[in-house]
Length: 295
Image: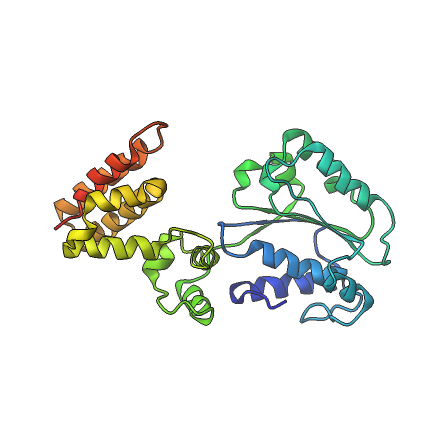
């Protein structure tokens, strides 16, 4: 598996520490959503499970690598849940770690959404973090460390993963075929390139491209795409539209320092707050907001 370019240095460091037998058994990968923390964890897990890992990662040739490639490595376990991660699921994972590794190497437990653990689940995991069985590695991932209990944080080694640089993100997106990749597009998704990639993959009915095209038509005074039409069309994505409008107004104000831009920004902030209330007429709120951007 090819490592994401902004994680190559981090991956190399973790790998070299493992080869030198200095890697902590409990790693917590934390950073913004959409930067590829899961891919980094999988890449590291692949190396941990390999019988003959090198400075570049797993050998991809040994029996352990072949089992992992086939998706049925007996010593690799992922704990996932659609909602909260409960104590039974954690105990189930811990039980799989308690015996000897079936392949005679390492055992790896990956928890992609560590922040979703219930308090009981986190407490159940503590003992394993404190006293892991031999050749056991726990890889925890979270977008927000505030969702984790302090005891989990204190017994894990945190790897703080920042957003990639704008140039790294744009190069990645262009290589993926996103020809209109721009800083504005990145900013719309919190500068997280994988969020952009996911939004433009076709699985999402509403993307920043749709928003940008609509706003351009609004600014151009296209009679078919006036504020009322857009408000009705976008009401199911009202919160996102308001946030993007807020970002646009903020950028305009920072550039031009005009009162009209500041007033638009304030209107956007109020609209974002209003849209958080259940039962609000989203189309009406958006109409009032979009009218502010008409020339």
